[in-house]
Length: 386
Image (spheres, rainbow, N blue to C red):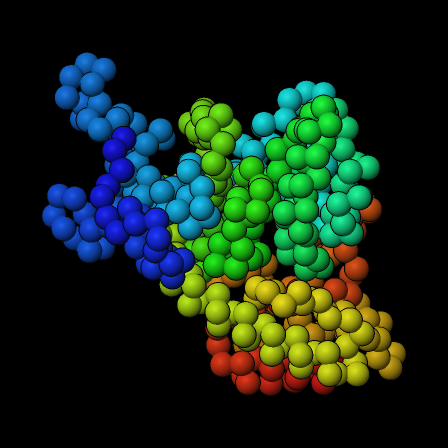
């Protein structure tokens, strides 16, 4: 399928300009500035076995999805983009790159759904996993690598403790292993919490980057979608096969919503970050907050309240989460509105009883783009009343 001409042919464009224009070039047929949504399941062919421009069936190809895939590849600095029905579907496809007998080395702080899939689905197919603190430095990873290691998989910042992992240091460690004659695993980075507006892992040495595009990329809590990008042609060919064969592809309406969200990504992330920094600073000043996790990037903040008179820290955490009015008690993140949750009881129940178990007193905030004074006032009321 031929790529549509447009301003993204200029590789010197800034990220801000790419965000606005990548995949959103005016429609070839009509010149429509807002690209059309191709709500179709199949396509008329010019002859038997002669699909027009390669379009034959919408599970395999869709023009709206193709625009989104080109857009995320451009924003991440990669060559091949892939859209999936959800971030979990992207996880499942990438995990298929490990074969029976292989091992996946995973960061020790990950989304509960990732842990659930690797432990309760892929392990049954003969894939082993080990969990290590990749934020502690390259020596930890070096010790964890073996000839069975096929994938090194991590988030940065991590979920929900917001630890950061040096992607370039991980890449250097993996390359060193290959240079010394060992098996070189693929580096898989979940970039959901940062987004390419903050970091581009492929440019730092990662092999695959993926997102729950439901979050910052779409940005409005109105769609479910996953995206993956690679510059490795062999990996790209395999992911394209898996995308089609597994069939977990998004519909064109969802692709359109993410494409629309990408056009303001750089602006929204700037506001998310400034608001999150102010919220984290406020929380650190409160004597009734025991610990604050904020790495200085992104819009996510986590904290543990101190215990109060007659109330445990976990009890206070629940009271805070149930006591906000502007922060909505809900799972997910990255939308324009602020959300609050208790990971141990919500997004990370899958890791209960495991070494990755989350403190029941931990509160996770997705800081939105509202007025920051209003957000702080809302947290103040909830903390005071907890």
